[in-house]
Length: 139
Length: 81
Image 1: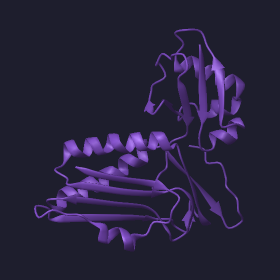
Image 2: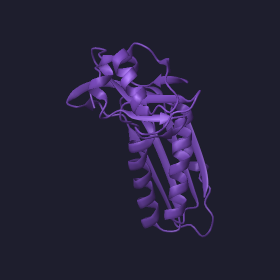
Image 3: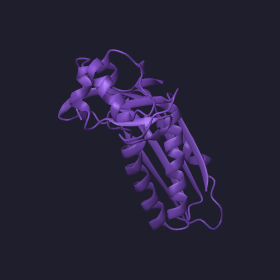
Image 4: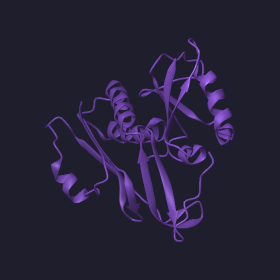
């Protein structure tokens, strides 16, 4: 399974990512997911989110997840882009593409990857409100 | 034995620093390190049940036996996406 991981502060350019798709003749499904910053966070209007990462561990944990995906589904490739730093409301913070022979595997793998990312990949977000507050969130 | 400790996310605000170091007896566990850290940074105490801990880039449990020079990271539940 080919894997491409991009974690940086650059804006996510969906229009540029989609045409870069590489798909062999045996593949019948390309699933894309885009996560976008919402304007509301826990009933409070926000301007955007500041993302922070433990970069070295992020790379390692994503690769462990990709290893597991490879065991679970016959995927041809995964591409994942996660933006760090300041991301404004309505801008994408996450973009994922899965290429698989069939839609069932592609949808399942995409959902699993995002669910697991939210469980184990050390990235945190700090919503910034209209007033510029960044309240500490107790877990 | 000396280990470095790194804090991420709002744990930096709770402790007032991004990293520190601790000296512990040989054979000490992550749980022993946590006790020392909570004594130094009492605000970490309220978070201890949800605190995630990594040594290097791997998650480890409270019973993990630390080794000289290891890098330990403490952080709250992750929130990517």
